Image 1 (cartoon, one colour):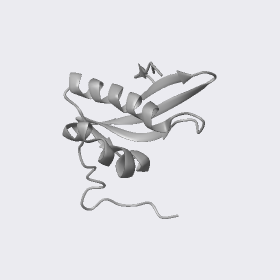
Image 2: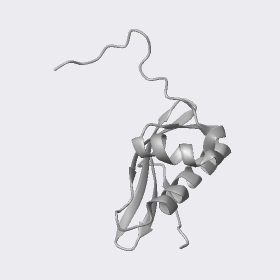
Image 3: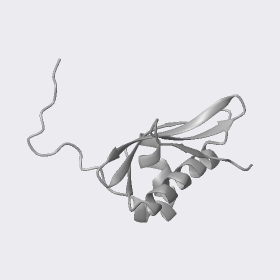
Image 4: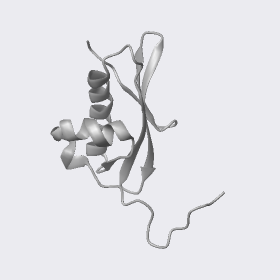
Length: 106
């Protein structure tokens, strides 16, 4: 299957059309990195192949713009990136909140 991924910078995501639905990798920009925060791949689709296409497009974007990637989304962080070492050189650890950061308690 050939997967065409488009970058939508106005919406901070990478998207591919899969028939009537979309697969989406959403990010936020943090200084010199893209923080990969949400991944949606419809269940009936090949998650690994589609995720590879989405992340590969994000990786090329980062390479072209001297950026790194931060894997915030749990599937990417815990399963995808450990199995795909080709992206390791672009990964940056998320430092989390800095010292003295305050949390809102409700």
